[in-house]
Length: 333
Ligand SMILES: Nc1ncnc2c1ncn2[C@@H]1O[C@H](COP(=O)(O)OP(=O)(O)O)[C@@H](O)[C@H]1O
Ligand SMILES: [Mg+2]
Image (cartoon, rainbow, N blue to C red; front, side, top):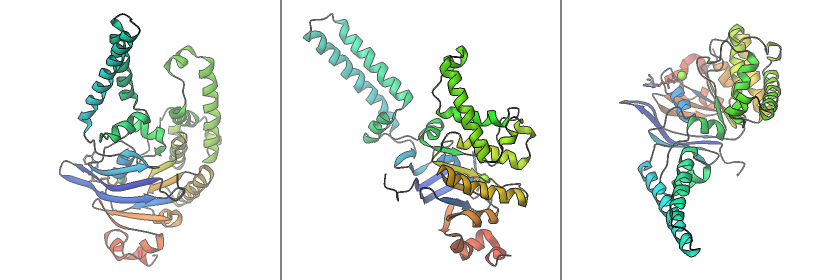
């Protein structure tokens, strides 16, 4: 992958809810390792854009690429998929029959071929490995990655309203995040196998490292609900990082924070970008945060991107001042 090619690319992305166009044809490129902010008035479509990128909603138009792979797109010609399954099953039975004739084997071999090939292709359709997605894509069949696949491909997010497991400790909350990348299954957990114990211990070590990175190592065993508000926000960031994302989406990370907590959050976002090399996109209303850490800012209004540029450019853009910042922001008041 070319270093200068974007990690995230939005091409004409739109999402409607019935007659309401929440996001309308947004184009955006996010460079690897950068920090980009999305700003705009309430209801502008910022969270909806995150929901579409993270696979919670399918876009109603456009395309989202992550490192050149289609992450989200409106479902397209998916009814053709059944033809792919049928073609593989028929080919399998024909091959079975031919092999049967060649080695003079019982006629049942054609049936075995049919069962193996149709079972195999149906499994592939459920698991959707990358070769299967590529095959479909070549035949014009496209669908969005599912939310769990989006996590696996390297996208993690936090939510505008905190969503932690309240009764679980800080450490356990982060360990849940690490499980997106661990290979143990239900049986390992039920039987408490050696593999399960080793994986859990590795998860714990990783979770402790992440708690330390966000400054919560001392609170590892405190229940999430008993953490200070600012610390709960940090914990969400640590949990998002636990899935080892390439792209981290933060929805209003400093919302409701006091000035000291906000300052810490700014430093935290910068430090995790540097330490973990993640690309960060954040939605934020607090202009201290936005102007302080963004390399690029995109402005949404009524679902449309009305401006994009450096903090300096955005601060002095008349359209942005009109729609969102107000006159005070332009003069720094
Ligand atoms: N699931 C949904 N169903 C219907 N309308 C929605 C849904 N999610 C968001 N909207 C609408 O889309 C618009 C944009 O909302 P949102 O993306 O939350 O804005 P922002 O995060 O910029 O404040 C709003 O008018 C909102 O009511
Ligand atoms: Mg929002």
